[in-house]
Image (cartoon, rainbow, N blue to C red; front, side):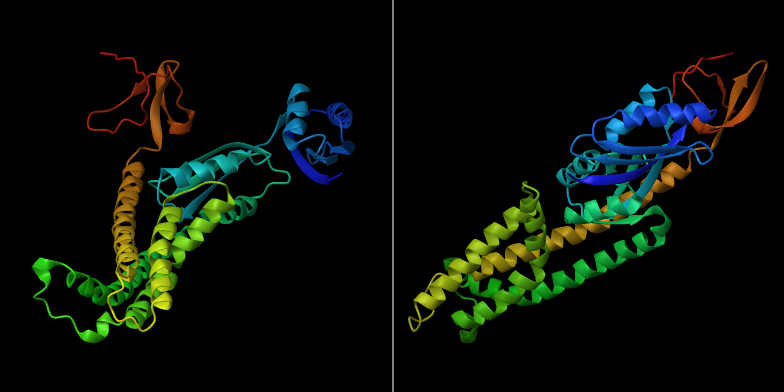
Length: 339
């Protein structure tokens, strides 16, 4: 038995009889050992066995009794997403959390929005869930930290690319010597040494490539696969096969057909792609946010015989809006033309 305690903020109660009704209704659910409803604070404290009743069952029972559960919303920035598969994985995991009404992840803006019923859930719980998937999240109140993080991430990836390129270029140079049309190129003899190539490829594989191993680990841990799994698998095959050839052919000279340059150059090019992606994503994200700020926060809506200013959140389908010449439309809704 896994006993849990939760507090449910209840709306709609008008008297002590309402609190008593909710209390008795909750106590009838299987697995609920005790339920106490405080009319003054409008909160219900419930002890229940989550193997017999889920948090969603408690919410449903309260709603069946004619009351509601106060919902809360939280926004946060997410770092580490690389494709639509990443955002879909996070969205699915958050929506599976007991008490979450709706979770949406925006890959372009690198943001998330969750509507949930407070109780056992807190904003920090969503951050921990995202981190368990191999990503990171910053709550809305820490947006400056999120912005700084993005800038630092671009600088970090750029720095890793130059380090990776410095180790990979000598290996790429040795690769050109194997082609007939480039046989005229001078290649220093020491670069053809298998141990030198091994030494050059190792930092790229395990230092620069550590992010791919980390991403692959979390993907496989959550029973899924992504690009990190593919990169880690492909480059590791080339690297470890080359290591095997070096150790199995000690003293055989330089003609072993090694593939150290394959793994190193692949990682370097993928890191370069991630640098371009991070910069482009940052620009597009800023452009979208600036565009969203252009939307008016109020609209002139017909109420009775006059137009009054209301918040755009209060504009409903069927409302008649007054849009003055040169003004921006505050909503995308079916409108009625009036001449």
